[in-house]
Image 1: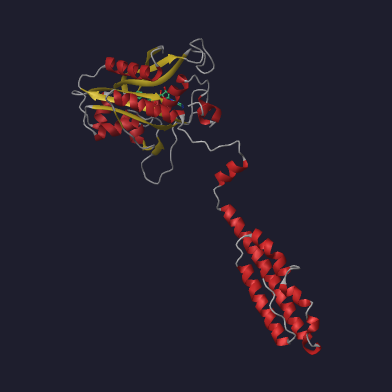
Image 2: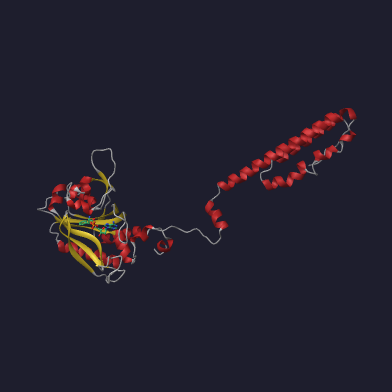
Length: 358
Ligand code: FA5
């Protein structure tokens, strides 16, 4: 910033002060970064400042006007100081704002060069569900979905489990506080989706229905309170138990490979007759007995059976014409056995050492 030609005339001197002041303020206002402001610091309020240089020239002003001119100069210097400090604060705040709105993952990676952004992956249970859907689609099934919050009728009554039926104890259920008169609950199995499919579509039906289920089960080595099942339903003319056994053998072989050792054991479900449970040799202990299989050597993967005529009646399908089978398998249990996880709760811990292996 050039120092204007000086004059001893008080009026010219004051004019000079004003010119230099305006130039200085303009320089300050044009700064856009704190570093830039620092470099002009000596020029506007340090030794190199033309305004400060004017101080030494005050003595040339005639004594009568010196005091007044001196005051104009002091005011100008104060003004520069004030505007400089304001600008400094403004630029610091601006820098902070720019930092706050910057991409934090970039900063994180820049500050921690050993980390690089990782791409998320699907959970092993989700992958298993997708794989099972593909297996069943290849076998000629379609895939359907149903609500997780259900009415008592779909979850129990239509499945031949009236109120106060002792079999309700097989499914320790979460009930919702709903305002409507009907009882609403979190479905305890995927079997209510069977009922919805049968009420909506005419046979023949070849459908699987995967989804989340909710039970007041205490989590342990092979149980969770929120878990997944895949329901299967086939209704056609002439369907028998052999079709059910063959379908289960086919899909489990496709999922596990040919080397599983399995059995169907007679069981009871109110909505199928006859009913069975499908079990495989525990893959943790190879059948010797361990904590996971409660020392039995076997792990139950699902329940199944021929659709009870009472269920057909509830949904309006003629049991004289149509027969069918249904099954419900635990997807988390399938994953647990496929990868020999001794504790199912490991699937909910979000431990990357496990998840990154899928
Ligand atoms: C049922 O839920 C019947 N709806 C299955 C069925 C469908 C039978 C159609 C007949 C016809 P069950 O309660 O046994 O049955 O559960 C079936 C499977 O779900 C079990 O074998 C197990 O693999 C899985 N399962 C059940 N409870 C849990 C739980 N708390 N945690 C994880 N998996 C579970």
